[in-house]
Image (cartoon, rainbow, N blue to C red; front, top):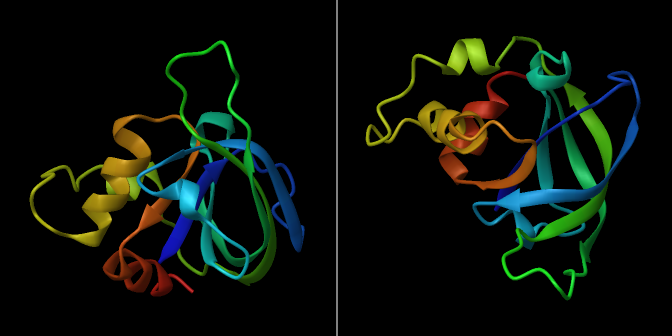
Length: 136
């Protein structure tokens, strides 16, 4: 399984990135060392969307808070960037893909990242990973 993260990324040129206590959804909590991850610079923080592909070099689940009933699992990860995107892909390009039942991998990304626009790590299907690979 491949993964994607949408987060605030200040240095798009960094080869090694770390993300602390990131929210996970859609299977994102299963991320592990060695997994492929697609990196999206969050438009909420001025980013442009997909900018790189990387390999997870470490992943560690964050312990849940004891006094909170309902919590989204969180994970801290480190990533080594292995490729830069050659074409843009972000909210603007995915917005038109809003028929949630059409089975298009771009629609999957729009749904998982932008229907609820919070930053997060998500698990993606093999089809979505192939779709994203076309941008490199």
